[in-house]
Length: 441
Ligand code: 2HG
Ligand code: ZN
Image 1 (cartoon, rainbow, N blue to C red):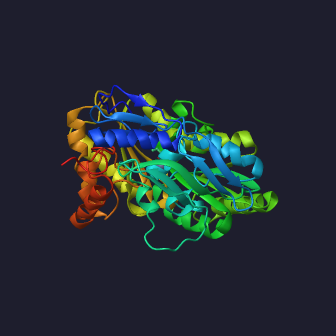
Image 2 (image 1 turned 180 degrees about the horizontal axis):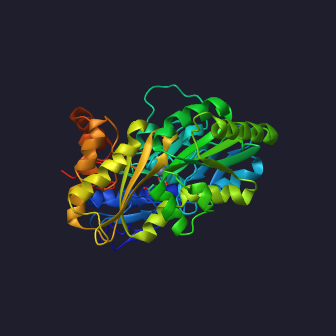
Image 3 (image 1 turned 90 degrees about the vertical axis):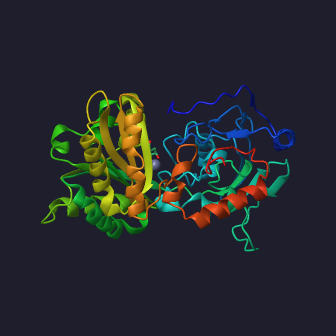
């Protein structure tokens, strides 16, 4: 995002867990801060040093240790790129339980460390469920081997959970054991153009009811997000007729066991939606080929890239009730307008998109440049709105360096105090990714 810059002079690229352990021991003795870094695709500055810490890149720990095609359990080193793991399990008819726009660069260790959500969470759940075990190097160099391949292990405190989403503040993840689901025999998608945001909720209910077990994604982009994606060549644009009068779009994906059955279900759904007395959608475009399937997904997955080509983005990744998605986006736009900041030289676009099925809204504010007056108008305004809804200030991107100050909007003082105690147990000298998740004291 170009928002965070450290002053590090040193990047270390260990090849083995043992080397990670030796580095950590050395740094711990000398109280040198360490920033673990995966694919560096995070959006909250979590993998960027705040000062002159050592950067510990995991990219050379990039081997698959084992894969069991019967259970689908994959054990891989932290630096494996998500897409290469997807390619690795594909010939065995398995898929990774996680998928996200950054799959070509992000690494599995970083995915786990940040508890990344992404596009398949609706179907396969979060990494807290699909990760079965971890190998972690603690700040003092101790190797914590919890790399089990057991589906069930109910033996007291589940320590690995602490490292999932800790953003490298408790230790360095070096290996991941993860459950990969069988690849669906057939996947289809359709993009639906809606005349009004008010239709999203009833649409979601209808889609869930009609598609039931084959529904695998229900993603939302508002009109501004759609227009930006198209403007920057992301995916296949719908025709003018198809987008006419559309306030927002929903991408529905199905993944199931039998192509004809799934296609029939999707076609029936479309028919029902369009011919209803009060149609919930203006139109729907069904993908007819693998290329069209990818191109419809690109409209949704490409929003982030389109936004970054358009200017500097302020990104808020929040959990709020579905019914308030539109109000939050419109409210933010109006708030900026009332401050005189909605014009070409300041904020150009306010847009909303995200994972409706997970209650996760991505609110992006695109500006000509990062300006203090925009920052001051956005915060604490947005965090107060989130707190009002008892939502989360970070649904899936984490806290990183960007949101440490905002943690109290989502977590009680008691919770934060306990987090500090946990941090002190694992990292008494505060060398692990300092200034991330918890503010420096
Ligand atoms: C997505 O869902 C990502 O596309 C990125 O989480 C969201 O860039 C963003 O704000
Ligand atoms: Zn997302």
